[in-house]
Length: 322
Image (cartoon, rainbow, N blue to C red; front, side, top):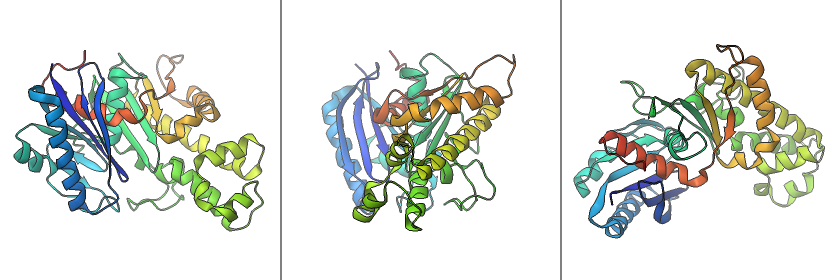
């Protein structure tokens, strides 16, 4: 049976697996990427060797989900401030030469959305927009069952850099008020940290004094549920900004569904109903009663690896989704 090696290259971990046509993952692994790029590349190559041996002779190629502005047949063109050395490195050519197999890259958000459109929350739908809320805001657009692609887009979207508030915080991309600076899990936690640093009364004061790393996105959700004013205000702003992002994306692409994943989605009940209400009220569609559901992702940490493999299969015209 044909299989594909799938990889999800992130700022902290390289996830990997042998991906089967039915979406099952075998021989999954994790390698740290908290090291210099030469070490990352060495670990990458060793992991490919291990998975090729495990997959046997039926491996059709290698699919890789990567951050940043991505070209499918090159690698990462732009990635400011992250994974130093990956930007501008011809990853596809390097690995194809090294292993003699077709290799394709896809932006990590696009990979996650493609996986959800084939095997996850949006299975069976051709037009899907998705976001992953974590250290940043990953995004992807699937149109006609394939990641949206053009000469300048490569194979991915950067909806996390849509400007939601023009007077907002400065982003790594150089703009101000990008969604990534407002609705990523890290951005939400940073707002809590800012209040605590200034001494604003908050139920997490003692935890802040003892271990500042312990207060992330879940603390905001928990604090709001306990009636804390600071956490409640941060959650309110997060809901509003995320809803505005979804409406903007809906107006750009008019999808059948919007899928939201990433670490923040574990607290979906605390914010998705409010986001859906906002979208139902303000999205401009025809017919007027058409609803664009905003739903939690289902595939979790498997999505990037699976989507990368699906993109490779589509790129080489391999029938792969069972």
